[in-house]
Image 1 (cartoon, rainbow, N blue to C red):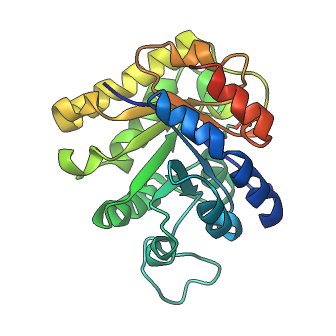
Image 2: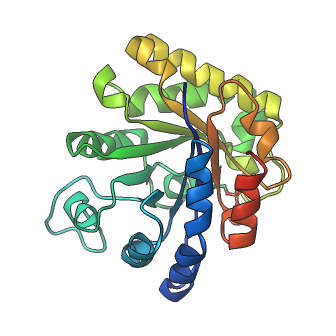
Length: 251
Ligand code: 13P
């Protein structure tokens, strides 16, 4: 049975002081989630990771939004896996469409980063999803299939048992134009079928999230789909009241 997962991606939002306030206020919700066998977490900016890790419940997942694949070296502006591990951070979002679009994050780069994460027993949240033009051209499965196959090539079933995949259609992110739950189910089930081809039975254990304009009002509909195991939430994860509602609406 796959545990439901609600993960907030804060993107480039919140000062460290605001992140701390959220972390402190989230403590009761982490307990509520645990009691109901749901995992919750947030992905703050690098600068807020330490404070959120320190002040949130131990049951709250704290994820980074990116990482470099090298341990150290001349890579100005980058942050490495050992640097995250020193703060107890072992979840990392990889290949978010904003990084693919603005930072040239390719499937190959995502692969390198996930390889390094698996070698360090960490958990990648691998984001895939098509643009509006690709969706309109009926190319969703082709694009998403390629992202999954190239990003995860050569990994073992044992490695990917830790993986989380997030399907986020680019056209639904921050637009209020969320994909219907039928589309979310269809693509998440397609992703699972590829994972099964690549890795066998472990595909049944891998959690696949939907992301893109998830709000308290629609979160339950997505999570009721058999192959949607949770949500990756941007805007609606920023305010503690809305984050609480996302959780209470799926209990
Ligand atoms: P929104 O929930 O704001 O559409 O963002 C989704 C997202 O990109 C999460 O990673």
